[in-house]
Length: 253
Image 1: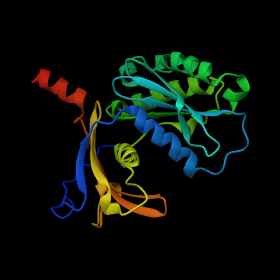
Image 2: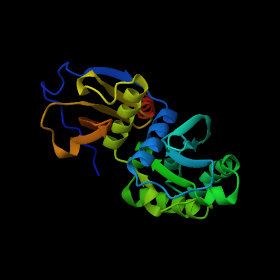
Image 3: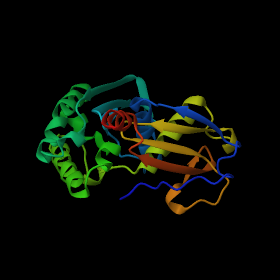
């Protein structure tokens, strides 16, 4: 599906929302995703203590497994969390999609060491969220890579459902980055106009997200509620505007 690239109207870009350019680390994004998964999901069934959550970030230049130890409220205990990265990214398996799942093996073994017992692993959710590296590929190739990854995750011993391995839309990637930035700054839960906007620069795409008072096209609009406050967000993704794509095109031309 082509990425939305509608231009901003003059009113949408006014200074009511301070705009801040950020290049956010995947760890912060994964922390927010893990927290949102638990805060927005139904209360989990009792699980062995301590409990864990695993987010696999399928970026364009590498794949990272974030293993979070969760407190009683489902929030990550950062002091007990761990991360491992392997390269190249999943998109590099476009010519040999069956090997994509095999590339996750070191990450899954790392996660098992951190989680511990088989009982704890069976109660631990693992989710794969791939980004612009896979969005650049043809749909059939992208799906073949996901099928390979799902097979590996299903056989991992962790709790997994096929729908938990997916390519997230660029607009969602921007929303996660916006939440991460404003969570870190302590600006969530209050006046929407005191939040910051973000420009998130990934390897293969760039995202622009901020609070807007405009009536927005549905494909560029997201409502997000935190602390009793609902935020109407403009979120747009620009494929091929990431750091690695920029370097590739600079060398090419």
